[in-house]
Length: 167
Image (tube, rainbow, N blue to C red):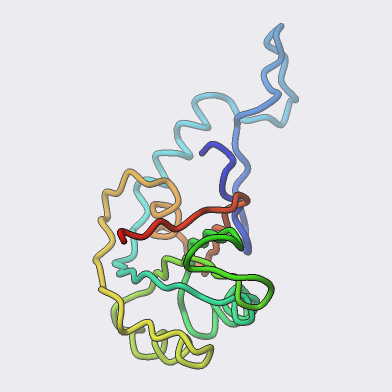
């Protein structure tokens, strides 16, 4: 993760052992986990059962994005998101409430009708986009985190993107 995406609503988030420790002289706080403990924790995480998910792509207008990003709304309708805001000057976007966001919507197959209903409530025709199965062995870190999460998660890019069309 290069810091380009911010996790929103990740309950019980685990801290990463990357960063300021160990210091140059090897010192770490007494409560800091050892390398063996970190590796053991990673193995436990890998051993957890992954959910079987599907995903669909949606373009959501700014006037509806706050509703979809609400943790309560995501939990009620049982979906997770990866969101990329489009530049206001992008061909598929606009200014203010017409600004668009590209969203990958992740959910379990049995929840499909309720997720489609949730998006219909905010004027997004999710059913019109192609459904894809999420690879359980994905190399995309955020997809892997969504697969392993018990709760709903939203990854929101802190960068603005431009949508190119093949005219």
